[in-house]
Length: 145
Image (cartoon, rainbow, N blue to C red; front, side, top):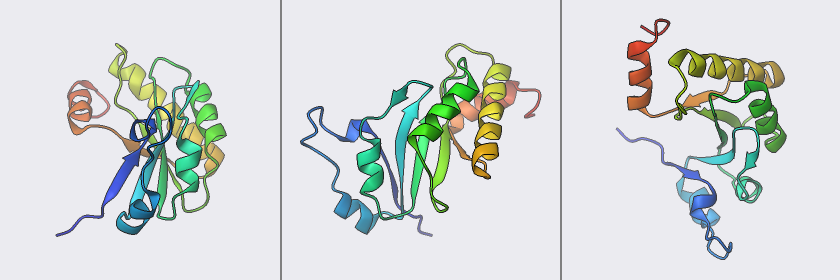
């Protein structure tokens, strides 16, 4: 069985001076999809998001890192201000940080984010995380058991 090749791009793939950039010709030729970090929480925009987004011809996903202790509305407004998705673009919420918050608080913030995006775009975003993080949350969350 073969799986589609995709990559994750953020400011980490660019040199600090911007002289070293990912080779988008190779990425577009070899990858079936690309995920690009748009932002984090309500105030950080990845400085290379627009450049990366504009240079992709393969299916693309914009992802946003959620801070569970921050306002879901503020975070999703910021995300949607960064990204104006087309009908084929997908939005993704990166949920991997707990910042010392309870599992119920994390769940509440995530649900509010999901609903906000659905109300504004007509589609739910994809939720991305690490398997170990999700499993540890699932074992202690009364909703998920």
